[in-house]
Picture 1 (cartoon, one colour):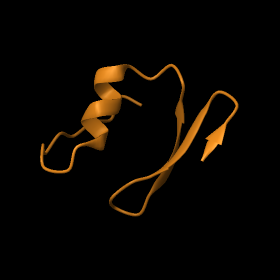
Picture 2 (cartoon, helix red, strand yellow; picture 1 turned 120 degrees about the vertical axis):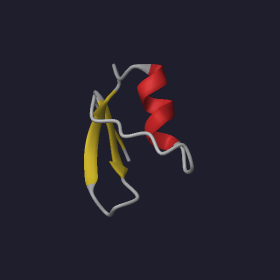
Picture 3 (cartoon, helix red, strand yellow; picture 1 turned 30 degrees about the vertical axis):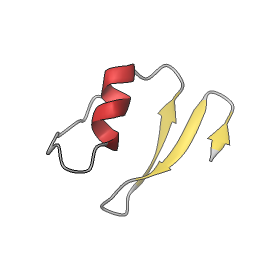
Picture 4 (cartoon, one colour; picture 1 turned 135 degrees about the horizontal axis):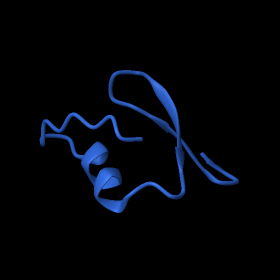
Length: 43
């Protein structure tokens, strides 16, 4: 859900996180892939 300064997201493992609007575009894409096996912790 959108909020001032960012968005709340639900992760595939059931976790929820607040992600800032200033997140790097490539990081945002990496955490959104389903089969890429990326392990992103930079947000």
